[in-house]
Image (tube, rainbow over all chains, first blue to last red; front, top):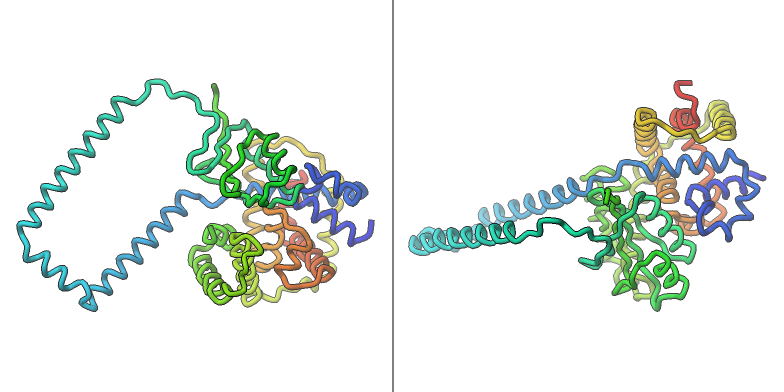
Length: 214
Length: 172
């Protein structure tokens, strides 16, 4: 194998196109590749995919914190430029409105407490196992090896020309993919194979959680 | 979405924010050229990736692999190691050690050759092919093949320590 073919085999293996559904299309190219090339690429791919994903929770906190900081800066600037001054002065001069505010807060707290008590009392004693559901247009699945299942779905989609973006969230393996419109029979067949319902809006969003003991 | 993608690549919050901001400026400037022939999300993502590559090019330290003897030695060693590699089950400690060494080597690779490291990550994590990378880099497919070959060579140098561990030669 010449250097160019060797590099191509390395690229294909690094992209995961040598082991899954893409085998039929690139098989000839990779078949003659040296074992060393494939081992090198596969090891690198595995290490890249196993890299610590960004902690989604702390990332969300960071985004929230940024938003709060920005809001505080805007408020401070508005006060400095006396944009808020008339409103503040009006609030200071209206003691009865403040008292109403206190009662309102107490009432809101009471209702919130009652709602929490009701939820606690009425909660089911045994949580029914949910295998699949579709809240927020995210199709949720469970698997013994979520990463492997995701890899399989991503590879199957890629083989029919659909690129998926993978991510991790709260320990779940997620993927997003923009499906072709209209949906091709090949994509439809893949969705059916994995038991995934047709997504609305042409965007496929899946999150796979680890299957815990039954 | 763009911020997450940006953080995934640059791993630094401030730099990621700057990249997203720069991306939105470009989106604003180029929105007239978006005719809806393609999906919006991939279009935005492509602009972000172009922005990342531009930023890397501005900051790229001209690290050369002129030390041909050293590079050849490392390449030879890795070819030799990977050819005889037999996948062996790892215990937790070994796996952790491998991950740590990889993170350390990869961080150095990203720091010194951000464009090369990012291209490899896009291939490995998102499965980009030669043509897609050529489009992002603004190069011909032939020049891109050459660039990817360079990426591979540089990765071998920066990840040499990890390759040795991964192929079962700890501490050698």
